[in-house]
Length: 270
Image (tube, rainbow, N blue to C red; front, side, top):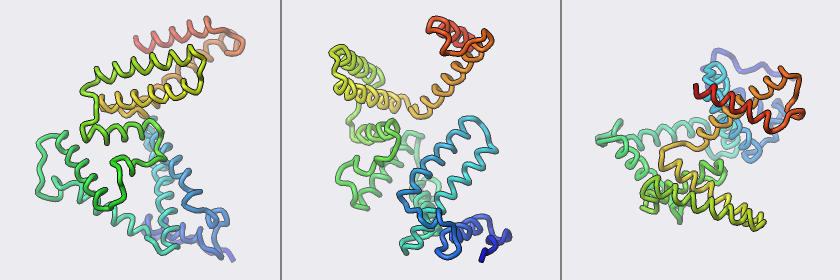
């Protein structure tokens, strides 16, 4: 027999937790929700985080509200599965992040003072390092950098960890020189026709680019998302202009499309 949804009079977060419990109920729940595991839900969690970022990028606050709700659902979903296993529940998740935020902000909730934002960042990293050591999980400084992160983001985090102990190029100038070196090696492998070595050199190039982004305090994922959006807008301009001429891109050629690309690029700069 179908049961009614948890009452709307509940606090919204309590109602969401109750809805998830009902969805996972072995007798009255949803078959799809019941069969899910941490592993099967994790990709949706990542996807929802990207959709939050996309709403922010577009400046769509209405959509951002909805996407944050979808992301919150993912947290509640994971917490519910953990509760079923007797490991932790949603309150434990909230309690853990509350404690972490208080612990990592001694300048707000304690007697610590920082002279600058840079000093505050150093203090933050020192606190995280102390937490890693206390947990005793990381034999290497790099061990707990999540492997599931986007590769560019993980490259930045890996290089930041190394930079924290002095393994770092002194300035952007040296990073750019290293980038020139890696691009030269990539060109050599392409010229030699060794695609496997070219793939490896491409990875080296991208890792140095991630280092450059860290050095300049640029999030490479944000920078690339912006460029993707710019490329998409400019290519749509090409499509629209070709359509005015009764053409599709397939019916055009590189010279014509490149001229239209220069046209919209000049307009952007003007």
